[in-house]
Length: 283
Image 1 (cartoon, helix red, strand yellow):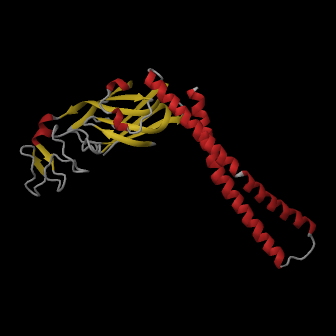
Image 2 (cartoon, rainbow, N blue to C red; image 1 turned 90 degrees about the vertical axis):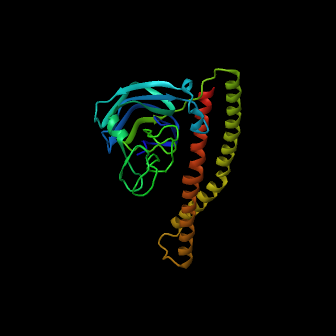
Image 3 (tube, rainbow, N blue to C red; image 1 turned 180 degrees about the vertical axis):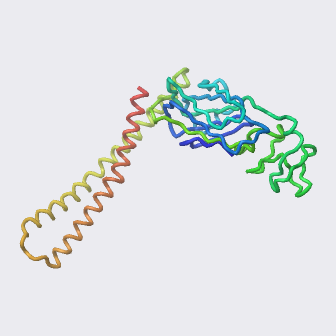
């Protein structure tokens, strides 16, 4: 199965790598891998972990660009090993990760003689690679049916990342952090200035939205306060229909106050806080 990295928002694949875009920048101190559904015809021997902290619109921008990556860890697995813990004494700061399966334990004879049909699961001779039972091409991905014409039997599907030899589940131990792209050229400088200006405009807009809630909140608080004052003056007087109507109104005011304050105001405040934090790092 496809590798599953928590809090990822985008993934791309080659036949031996998975590139993952995380939800923002994270400080990562540990990566745990659990391997399930292991097939002994082909098992991972070596895993390389790469990272970078470049913000990109789509992770495909990082594909086939080795100069953009830093190597964080190289791990050698024993044959049949099903769990790996990769710790970073000095945590890495990453927006993107690349996991490379670079070397394998492989029973070449077993894997080259027969393959499993993706439709009916029958054993099919690798040559010519067409199932005699149902007519399917056995070199297609078992999950998305894509066919890699450059490599007949890849470890990972280049289209969806499916692996028929094992299931990889990754868990990251880390926390969100604020980091920005390094300025290494005039083009980087122009990009950073444009980002700062965009964030300043957004901060101004969000701040105005936040302040715009103030009159409504004050009005709702006034209604609640007036109701409390009326209750204090009317203590000892039996409740009547008008009092019941007043309670309904104040309950509605409390509900609206909670919705506005805990919803719109909180969202605007959190968004503004993130912008200020990023601006602080940019400067």
